[in-house]
Length: 433
Image (cartoon, rainbow, N blue to C red; front, side, top):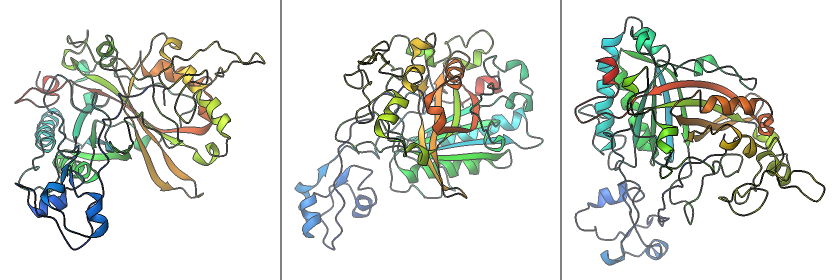
């Protein structure tokens, strides 16, 4: 949970609720009544609140177009895979598969070809083919992204060990790790995100069906974020601890953004097929919320190093104000404690190490002791995990005040190749090169 954030959520108007009375307004031109009701929150057409409150029918002139979540579309083809630089969506699924016994390079290539075509169709708002389940019928693309990656052992299974990039090595063990091996690693990884839960689930089912007899599910994690438009203005998201989570994320407009996040266009010295790709570190981080919520507000802020209300550093200013690491109080104590999470994770405290965080929160019910199984599906992107995630996590491992209130329960590292050109599938340069 580094003190870095993704570019702020997209602004979207807060749509009024749909009418619930028996009376209904006339259909807007070109949109059927059935489609209008089926997509009132997704296509950006809704009824004015006054008519909904009184149950009276509204004239067509009273139907106002709103900023549409459903119509927003991410592009499948491109220099980079989707799901990396786009703002994190409201719903997410992280899924890992293992190739079945006997499946190798040929089967993997066929699978990636199927997956890429399905992702292309669904991201455009189309169906997944003749056997489409219809789960997302009537909805638009809803900013759907589908991203594919390869784990360390994928290269052994497919006989491609010589093409495994040197950066794709098992992550070192950290003292805070309590990793469940059954929910870690995997041959293949898929990240699905969308601003509509049915659209995200629809993509998940399509990907699982496409796996067929070539791969079996290893683990799946489901997450969520604040919906775009839920706040009066674009804001950095909060995590389940109530903290504004991630203020210093690298931003695409920064001159060194690509250098930090993406593998060079050459693909580096040992993996040309990784050109314009990135490395994703995935961690399931459980938050010990009952313990955290017993802390006073000031104690929570000391742990993080920022004000809970607005994310500003304890040394003053607003969320984007530079933190004064040397500032002391009247008694001579550092205002931002030496073990504060925000201090430890700063790039200038880690030889410039930085990563692009794009996480989801999760809640998987309660454990046998009645404690919430909830926290963060941490996903971070970097050109080299040995220069991004690893040095920062090592430093956190040595004395982060937050470590007392979190537990790393699963982890993985995946090589995510660059985007596919039209007519190609993701990973084609590796599997057919």
